[in-house]
Image (cartoon, rainbow, N blue to C red; front, top):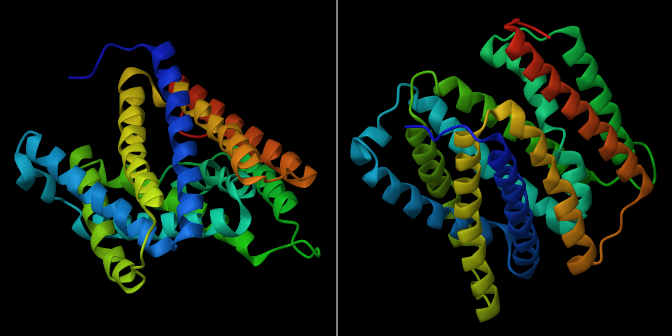
Amino acid sequence: MSSPQNTRLGIWLMIATSAVFALQDGLSRHLGAATNVYMVVTVRFWFMAVFVTLVSMRSPGGLGAAVRSAHPAIQALRGLLLIVEICLMVVAFVKLGLIETHAVFVCYPLLVSMLSGPILGEKVGWRRWAAVGAGFVGVLIILQPGSGVFSVWALFPFASALMFAVYGLLTRYVARDDAPSTSFFWAGIVGAIAITPFGLMHWQPMAAGDWAMMAVLCCTAVLGHWLLIKAYDLAEASAIQPFAYFQLPFVSLLGFLLFSESLRMNVLIGAAIVVGAGLFTLWRQRLREKQGRPGL
């Protein structure tokens, strides 16, 4: 049974989720540079696979219920998208830094809006298309294509945002027939199976301190997802989703303090445009849901 609705607590849990995910990204940036991306993501998904298996065994219907899916091919595709998306993000953390990576990645809600029509059959109105267009102007300001400072690595967080948007939409698609526990199980298991060969091929010794950070990384992944699930259980998604943008200032603070990253003016302006467009889209979505209208 769902918990009683408590929007204020849900907001605080979403802010806490953003802080935990920002810490997770900082740890991934350090470990990806200290060892290699494949090994970091492999250990993380091994832990996730064990965790989702234990959770599934304790859920109604047990492990068998979690394995059964009405859309096994799409569930497998979700797991592959998630693992590639995370690898691209960790590479971007190492090559670009936390600040610029997240400044581009925050466009994913706009990509969700853009792709909700072809994937879910939802109607996308002109206001949402206008917000998507404005958001992409912000992304171009951040990337500065055609300028001497443009880096090909800047395309990695954009590709990651695109994959994460498709992953989210496919999650909503399979939710029509599959339980959340099923989607959670498939994402963890498929991701672990897919990344393991690459992790083993790139395995290397790791310092004791880095293993401790790896343990914290795995724990923050579980804690972050638990906080997120609890937040959605206590409040409507449209009410708390805007507070997920707190991850950008949190991760920027880590970039400043721990990795001596700088914030270029074009990144600040572009990120403000992208976040503004995303917040407008979320506001219109909430308004549409209240009015029961099919489009924006």
